[in-house]
Image (cartoon, rainbow, N blue to C red; front, side, top):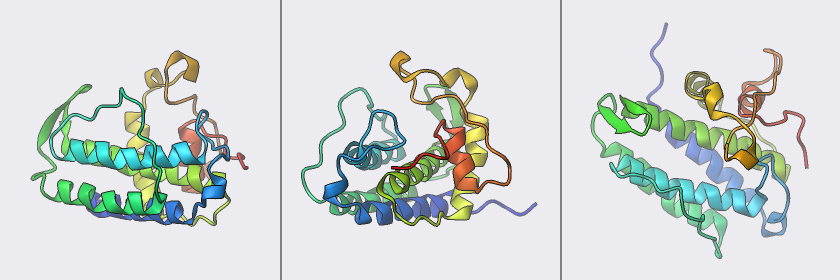
Length: 197
């Protein structure tokens, strides 16, 4: 078995692909529905921009705060995303040994667990954004497969449920193994693989 790619390289690639999709999303698409139940295109992109801030905080050893409202983005989405992306990668590059154990709300885990969670977040939401805006989407195969492998160990059944009950993830939707990895990843996170705008 070959060694896994450097997780920070995969994170950089995941962020880059998301940045490309954000840059192609036009303001006229702001109110389009997305596969994320309660979000339109604008709120999805604002969530992704907030992810960069929250994830940078985590990489620097802080505790992200998801309790407040996501800040609205009045300016150019692409510029806001691209301004923040290098800060996230720089924070991880300065974080030291990623194999070191850190304290998380779910217990002590290696820092790579957090990197993998961030890779997965961008991989899933890239599918969401491409689906919502009708963009051609050729996912990075290594990124998507890495995200799916991590998700199968981390997204346990007890983390799934109805949105009205406060759960972020719905039940997994069954798909066949011959579906593209990006579709299997989306379905694993409760997205309808047949969803389209």
